[in-house]
Length: 165
Image (tube, rainbow, N blue to C red; front, top):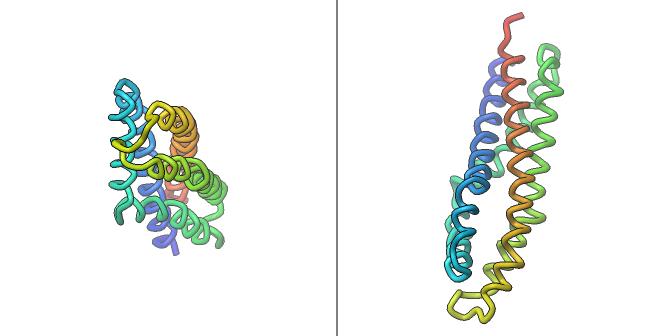
């Protein structure tokens, strides 16, 4: 059972770390870099990113992080895994927060940006950008903080799980 505990927890920690890294990269480089561009470049680039990010590798990690945290929690329920269980549960809860923020806030903003149409056909690029940019950045910071905290919780749970008794 210890192998299942460590394996699922390691996988949950790694996928959570990858998600935290993706969100962090947007927060500290992608969005600040795009902030200095004109409206056409901003809207066009984000539309292309929205298409590019919908790929199997991203979706595997995006869905995998909370599911693997759930599996790690289940593996820690039996006696012997309980010391790490509160940290796994916290990591799971924070992963769920990030997932929910993405689904409820960032994805609808992405969809609205895409629904505006090709940049060449948008009559008011500034309005489209204004509706998207600040709200998307705020919600991205929330999910960055949540996944970073989840990564810390799961990492500490991994230490507790692997600690010799």
